[in-house]
Image 1 (cartoon, rainbow, N blue to C red):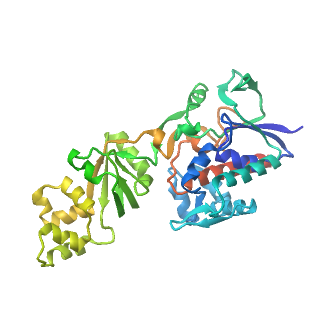
Image 2: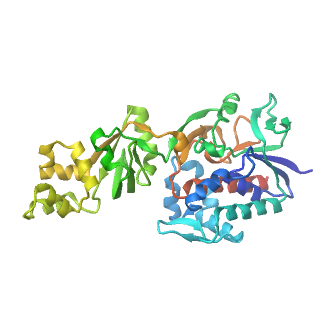
Length: 399
């Protein structure tokens, strides 16, 4: 007699599990509280469905914080393996200018999801919508709230794919965390990741900088440096240049109550060369006009530099260049988690085995953003969910 597997949640990990679990060995059911699968998957596709990244595998795995728990899964199902797997389903991909991987341009996110759902249904998986998981019974049976009333279900194997706490509009609220706490499973409070960061700008510059980008910069926090661009907002900053620093910024906020970041406005220009450009030129221009011309600075950069420097420092070439290459900004808090691209927190990694089984509840597994790890933007979070789901499917199929 076949064993039963209940997959709780219908996100990215659930999709690949539904495609890959052996229907000859298991009777598989997915339980989703919404009326459709993968709502967060589709919302993420609004700006182009970033499936993964083309980065070299050795560098790819190091993008995660921590990365060790994911190494085996990623090695067995890497970004290259995911691309091949998608192609076999008729989902062709291409590499964007940033190295990110997308479905071919005439393939919409809903069409990608439809092909995955078709594979799931062909794999004889039952999908149960409007089934909201409401915790465990005293003997670890699954409790559900449904349109027809409460249900209780016993399953041989349970796989939780409930997501984190970002984008609650898609149903990803993280409120499931209390059910695991009740079972004595260690959890970490959710925090925003890949989010906006609050900077208390001087009031007089907000109107001038709001909505303005800083391009081709590098940002340092702690011992990590990241190149990219950010957008200045009345709240603070956001953008791909700052998102990968989320772990370091959170760590400093937790430790000191604030986090310091240092922006190099001209990372391709050395301090020595910048100083020479200023001091060796003798144009018939004012000091400010001269540095703007020689260093190719824009109005926003000048406003920021003046906001952190007194007049005497601004007029001192050495001190000016020091700030140009090391502009210090103070982050006072994270942006709201409901606006964050992803979250960190959830089930502590100490609570799972190498195959994602809960150590305290046998035959219950947890994968995806429910776990306490960080993934930057660029397809890394989605790849990790697919890698974990594929690893677990292979593990269960081999039992």
